[in-house]
Image (cartoon, rainbow, N blue to C red; front, side, top):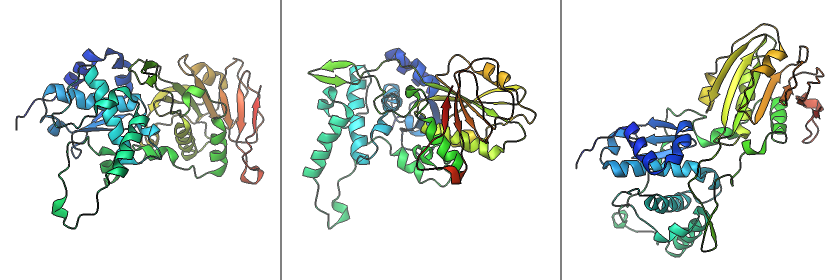
Amino acid sequence: MIDYNFELSETQSNILEKCPEWNELMNVVEFRNVPDVRGAGYEGKVVFYNSRLMRQYPQEVQAYLIAEQLVHIQFAHQLRGKGLEGKIWDAACRAVACEMLVSDGFEPPADMVRYREAKDLGAEEMYEILLEQAVRDEPQPADDPSDEQPMQYEETDVLYMLKNRDDKQQGDLQGAQDREIEDPRLAHAVAGLSDLMEPSLQVDYDWFPADRIRDGILKEQFKAYPVPHAEILLDTSASIDEDLLRAFVMGVKGILREDAVVKVGCFDTEFYGFQEIHSEKDISELELKGAGGTNFDTAVKAFTGDAETKIIFTDGYADMPGTRCDAIWLVYSDTPVNPPGGRVIYVKKPEEIKDHEIDFLIT
């Protein structure tokens, strides 16, 4: 077998030559070399590849394997497939991605099983075809395991492999966003954030571009898209526990859209800069600075103009800022606050919670 060279940067350049609109997407995707996966795969906003196995393919195919993962990420295939038959959904997404990439000049592996009809279908439509085919062609159990057919080329089952690794990190995988917050007051209040947040920041299975019509069918199409942006400020004065701050960030990250850029900053009487987070591992390693008093003017002036949603987590023990700021304040105390232009969610004690009531005030 010929051993080809593989350089990630060169492969990325080859992809951008064909799809320059992916430049922004590549800036928010993490590329990670994982020795025990077969070829390439993806999980959330991370593209996995095995550099040793990638060298088995020529450069054109290497570009295809990485580009396919970008297709899956851009069109939220992982999110859209929730509740469906996993392997059939994966095959449907691969089929649709393959025809899209071939039409843009990419070269799939020679043993790639192609479905030409996928050229005019969305992933859900292709899924229905493959599901019906699987039901119709379901084989009878073989008496002799040796009678089973060899598996043809299939994109790596990286999702299943990673979930079964002993050294996996919770938060690097899709299910991490469903992790519960142990503090019932905080969990209840975080749930209320979704009613106040900018809609573009929330999980939405229909966010992907789809404005090309062929034969009466609305089609997925490559296109640059805006990346939603949220900024969270944590009051790190001495009165707030670090575990509580991390739990809050984890909860907020879990209700945001998967591709949202989330930046977290700490403040007391000073602002200590933003840190970008992508996973629970990032949250566990979040550097929490500050232990002095609290200055809310410092906080509201720290927000940038890039964020659709601005969130402040505090106990409220300080004078309100003089600067108007359209932020969501989550107050972990009974202290009444009335920020100019802000919206407030009070974290209630467990005995005060009734049904799904969220105590918030718009001023």
